[in-house]
Length: 248
Image 1 (cartoon, rainbow, N blue to C red):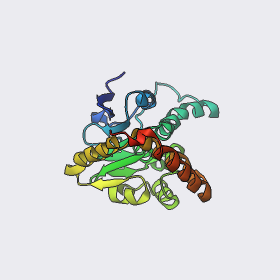
Image 2: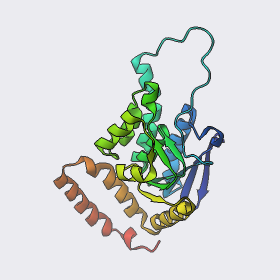
Image 3: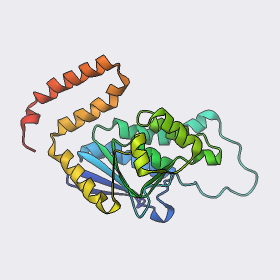
Image 4: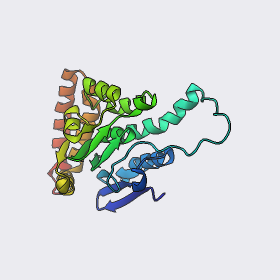
């Protein structure tokens, strides 16, 4: 494990910190792979994951892979080779959706590109009122397909189009209205708000917490009658469980 992705087990909470503060917590592909693997394994030890960035920023995006070697630029990779490289990032967004425990992002500063996508893909994102969100890829002639994939079941259609085409920075309050953020707090009160939210999750029966994750993962893709029936079945199944009657 590198010192660029820090983990700390606090009881049943796994805290993950993106730890490149001198570079705005920009993440290399190796860091993304490590980050994904940590979240994938988290349910073995934890009831939820909290993701933060070290220093003043959350994550300013993906870091470059170093200087281009001298000489003519290499030929662009074939489509399938590029697709395999991209899967590193798609897998990161996917694990936050598929892991059976909540993944919570805490955004205190800039969340740009990949950082904005992480904030969107997490189950809950709590942000400082000083946080900034942006999808700047179009400034560099890049179609942000990976970021858009993280937005698709989180962000409204008009908000996605606006952020991608304009490349404008968006405030935490605006990101809240778009669906990227769950709630916004004054910077001085953000940590206390996170602690209170984490405590609320830990107070609830684990199967109920996981039931909510399961429902939100699939119900929004179902026809309304099917989603209602799914909720009805979950309600009956989980609320009659002995686990729900235990004190936690």
